[in-house]
Length: 529
Image 1 (cartoon, helix red, strand yellow):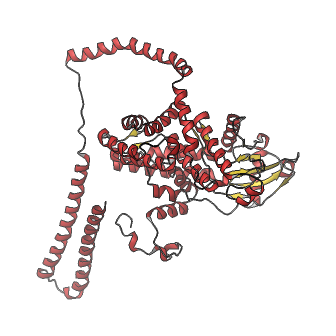
Image 2 (image 1 turned 30 degrees about the vertical axis):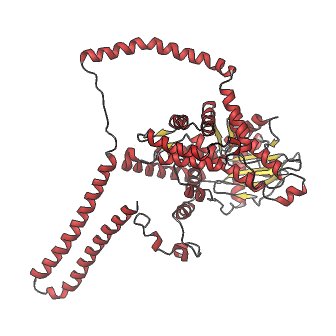
């Protein structure tokens, strides 16, 4: 129905097909979210991952997919106990002094239970659901087949590389399914932030941790949105918002390894103001070169350097189709002009990122996965900061880190560090140049040098002609069907034809009407696009 533009004519908001009743119609983005929720674990996770890719989906769809939840009924005690015994090799009562069989949280991948170790340490035990890996593998196989079909049908004109997106998603989801990976992520982050930020990363208890069971220190404290609890603990929200923003900037710009799921439920604010962080299934990494390119983007905006920003976007954004640099620079100039005369510390970073993504989408550039994840993470951090301290600007904290990255890039230490690699690359190129030159001269002398060119800009015209031809053929078939029906009714009168003439006429007229209506609807849909 969406393809034919009929979704607005179907009253889903009146309760049709299980939709909740409400006054206003459902949007296309809401239909996508609801469909993914109905399809289950893998597709919910797919929507959550796609919501991080602002370079390929619209802001409306991104916001809607960010609402995806995978809350499901908890597993029975017997099922959880069987997994614990299978994985840890001992009865639960031998492993824990106490174990709460009522989960504190339940998701489609696993559920979390409170427990106490024999030394009195309070812990959380995450247990993966039985059979979830097999179901995910089946769904990923289906997604891979669909991605291959999309790639074949759309070819190089596809707005994104569907097989690559599915591969990226499969890697992310399989990492979330492995609790050993999550445990190592937590330990790596704790080691990176030790002594650099007032943050508490839960300790991992490896003796009761496997790929299906994760035991970690239980975190306590006030939630970010619990203003009464924060006030009772004497925690100043403006200061907390500043430290939270600085924590993520430290992870991204200093360590290049960051927690990538910063929604409010993943924070516990301890009585002394320490930020407790949980859930390390989704993390991101950012190489030094990418951090420098990120700094270049914001430096170009602050310095009103449109040409420089175009260079950076073309360097980091893979293009599936030829990019018109003139048009790209024109859009970037409009973007830069919006922030003319304003220092970086006064800019609205979230709005600026959305504007950058708008330019990237329009010119069909695709940012690296890790950089897109950084942008999505920072937008979520901005939301948490706004909840803590309405009116606070994260750019105040953002600007010093960007300048720090750029200063580090051009420091004497960095140049000394890069000199050996640069010297080796230069020497290798110089040594290989004579051989390459001889091969090129040989091809010229033999007359076998071939240069291939591919004209650009014809694909949309050819596609439009194909569509026009298909619609014209459909219209001709409908007209011929109507004409043939009329001729047959006039000249063909076999014995007893009066009995079936009426039904035959109705059937023929209905078929012709359906063909004609389909042709009109496809034409209207093409005009809307």
